[in-house]
Image 1: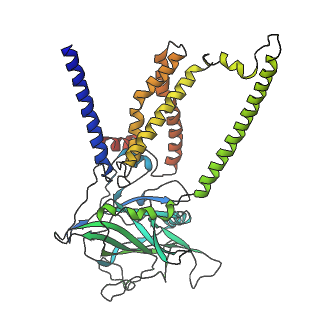
Image 2: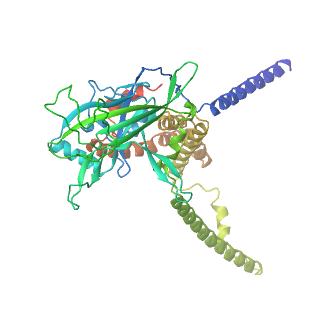
Image 3: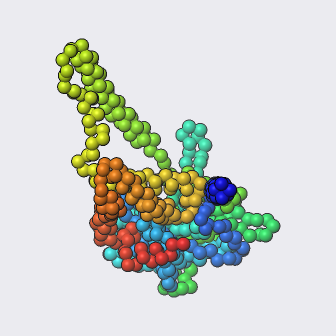
Length: 467
């Protein structure tokens, strides 16, 4: 008796310790909105800031492309900065950029490079402009945004919303061109604004904003082009800066494009922990309330129709049973009374049903656990690709419960080959999804999109780098 009491007490103590550890983990995670592994970085005046470029995206098409798939200015060596498997599956192509920033040191009219277009490159730029592709960049793990000022229609007060990334160019008209003819113009001058929050005691600063205003400017210069050539349209020595796109840069064959940029630093009251709040007001992330309400109304209408049909059938059967009770002769069972004979009867394709139920348990478990971790802050937007990576890992982990769920249900149907059911559950749905994925991946790869997963290069490389 003493040994049994000691064993039960030890089990209770272990269980209490496990519950306490889980509660501490949840409480800690509820306040850790930048988990996992994203910590603030302090910069002093003059420190180098590494700017990275990401994929080209569009709201008109779902195919992302690499930044260097277009003839933009390139650094001496392009280094891939993809960090996890989720970024690869999302089509992210994070690479180093040729821009050079120094913390709290403003720069004006920096010449990046000069590019002469040919027929092929001009066509590529025009296609991206037609599809409204945007260029995405990253500074200190913060995406680049374009501030857009809008006037509230109700209150009439101006407000600022943010657009993720800036457009490659635009299509339109300007003075001196026929009204019927539209031209393509390139955004070749960028005015960056880096917002920082400074600590008064240590004089260190943290980046809390990364904005840009793109301009299309046809740069001019005197004499022959060289590394020391000074532009007449953008020269800090004569205090001539780019503030508008009065003379835009046209995209045509044999056109010369000079890429330039400005960098300005502005102190902000926004703290580092709140720097992602502005991204909640992005213009592209609007909730389609009309579509949601429309879908709910359709579901309610169809559910009501099905309920009315079932109630009418049930009332008709009940009235028929009441008429049969008044008769003395035994009548054959009809209607809903026939159900009792099928309740414990195994279905004809019980193995397929068990596989579907097991797959549903796997999907449901993955979604629930992912939502719990997301609400606790473990899957913050600062961790790019974290959501996709977590879903894949949870899908694999939930396979432990899938085999049990499908085999248990199969045994309830008096089945004996439960191992075969567990094997089917593990391979049927993933095989179908993999086949569809391979076909779509081949089509995307044929379009030379960065969303294509090359198994022996990016996918394997990124899988090895998962922490």
